[in-house]
Length: 472
Image (tube, rainbow, N blue to C red):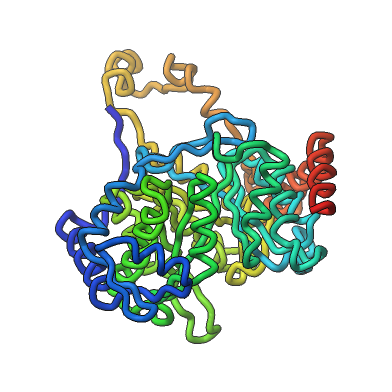
């Protein structure tokens, strides 16, 4: 028997209430659909009413879509091995990834920012590959050193060549998603057989299903790839200022995306989630707050209720690097994610409202994820772990330094922190009082140096991919 710490926000009655309000939004307010192709797909169903470009979705069709969507999705590595499941045991294992679409790169030591380039994409992907607490790599940045019409395809190539972990693909260019799929098919073969790439799309909050998103959804579903559909709402800005209002609205948008995916193809694999944040009236940007973390957890509980695989927020973007502010946000996000129903959090490593990719933040966050996972595992509570026989043998005033259980646990007890050394006051003074930040920077620098070592396999994939791009 194990003791597992868990977080639960909504009781069953509250979950049903959120669902009822979300359905009412879709029935009464509807969702604006910008694509004529998408409107024609919606028209196929009797559970739809359309007035001009606003689609009103009926309760019965929503229920049908929930039943048709797979409750479990298997994701693979590029090499074909199983990576993880989403949906199964949701909340028991939260899967993290690095990204997403940053325009700038935060230098590890100087802390200066520079434009994000292909080399940053290649090396940072390799960094994510080296860190064991990350299970996927999301599109890390927007390379500034390639033609604008080739951004997506070069970004995908550089990620594909430098990791075997699953890829979450954010395709920014319109009508570029099939170019990306064609590149991957040329390098890899059938990308649907053991899917290792997950296209990511998002609607426009509030209540707009834009043409670029529906086009990408159709292309992904026709390629038989799992799809990540996530909305981004800033309460007080693009969603209601109250937590309940934002939850109902964001959930309604997710249900609309779910219905559309199942109208394109029943049984298509879709992962749903939200990136909730607050609207900062001072900076006119977004920030994370206790309320936004609660909304993240509540969204996961709604998807758990629907038995739909879930994706949530990573807690990145607040902070100016791997600093105190970022650390607090990351700890709260990762710990609550591991204790709640969060399926995956694919976008770790950005700062300044996801403008700057920070390797130090990635490394710090990886350490936090590891500690959060240990906390979430809890501990055993049984005859073996309590071991009354040993307690009786040691008796009064003894010690457990050399007990059988202690000796059997030496390997675990002897593990050292990979980032921070354990220093006495005297040793710390002798070493000229190193700060925790300096040790993090030193560790990140060493890891990033390893990430810059190019393998022959990666160089060959880059050459093959570049040749394909030049000839197509």
